[in-house]
Amino acid sequence: MKKLIAVILLLCLLLPMEALAAKKVLYKGEITKRYGNSYTNVYAKMDKDSKVLAHLQPGNKVNVLALYPDWMEVRLSNGKTGYALRQRIDITETVD
Image 1 (tube, rainbow, N blue to C red):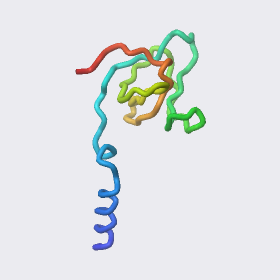
Image 2: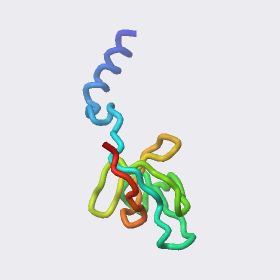
Image 3: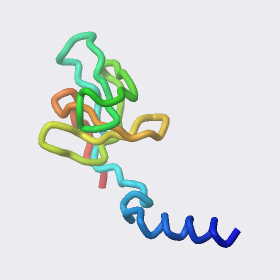
Image 4: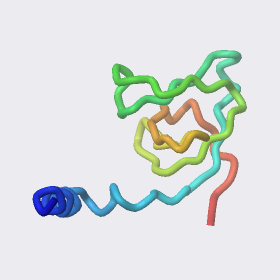
C-alpha cells in the first residue's frame, strides 16, 4: 500500500500542473460552412496523420481552448479535447 501511494505521489509531481487544470474556453466557434457539406476532422494531435476523434458537420458548435498558427484546440461535446485545422472553424463569440 505504501508503494502504491509513493507511485501516485511521484506521478502527481511529474505531471505538469497545466495537465491537471481544465483549460478555459477562449472562444465559441462553429464549423465553417464554406466547404459545403464536407466534414471537419478533430485530431488527437496537431497532425493530420494522428487519430481522428470526431468528424463534425458544418454548423456544429465547438469551444475553442487555444489558437495556434494552423490549428485550434477544441473541446468536443463529449468533453474530449482535440485539434482542428484553423480555417475550418469560424469564431462566433469571445468568452469573457
